[in-house]
Length: 309
Image 1 (cartoon, rainbow, N blue to C red):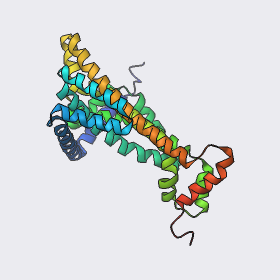
Image 2 (cartoon, helix red, strand yellow):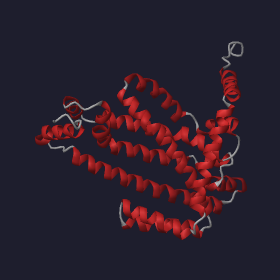
Image 3 (tube, rainbow, N blue to C red):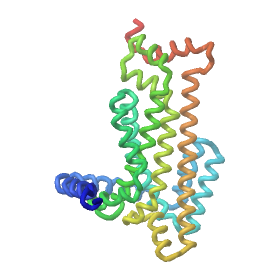
Image 4 (cartoon, rainbow, N blue to C red):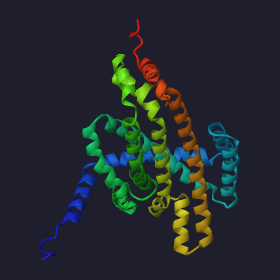
């Protein structure tokens, strides 16, 4: 009886994927070329200079973002990657993660803003995000290989799909969490919706948005090994090779290199989020006695140039 009434859901999905591949094959080819060029360019920038130059650049960036402790930790971690002979693979992985994370952020932040400002969009986006977050990551690789072939690009596409959900959710949460009185004060002073977004909502929601960016990067790194299965190379490819050969040493070397990259990027983005939070606190004091003054100050910031005249 179950065989007779079996729902051919898998066959339907396969037919849809085949149809998409035939109709939009030209688009997937163009996307593959563009992503491939961007990845190769960034990878070239990271690999071509001597390793000590890249280490100094990241250490200086860490110093500027947070301080000397993060700079020293970044330099020592990257030096360890050099000493275990995983530098080129680590830079390949870093290039993949940075490109995938940047695209995921470019998609997720505007989508989160749109969902925060439109309840209908929020209701439509929520089940899509649930699907992207709960679907096993390996499943993304199947259509990615069909549409983009084997190599870096399918791994990057799977990484983008897997990582963008927290960016959307935390951006929407941050925008919706902005004090309604501050927004109403901006409207009362004649500020447009765009100016309220730029000068009130985004600055106050910046800590939540940066937390979303942090999670996008962390999830992108978690997809590195899976991307290695489809020929993306880098540290994920090394771990895949270590599994095939039961090579414990190689697996731990590549695995620790991934951990070092993850800790470096996590600390940097967290420090940027803390800076955003400090600026938000200066914009909006939490003291009840000053809440009215703060609302007026935020509104005046968003007021059009000619409103006071």
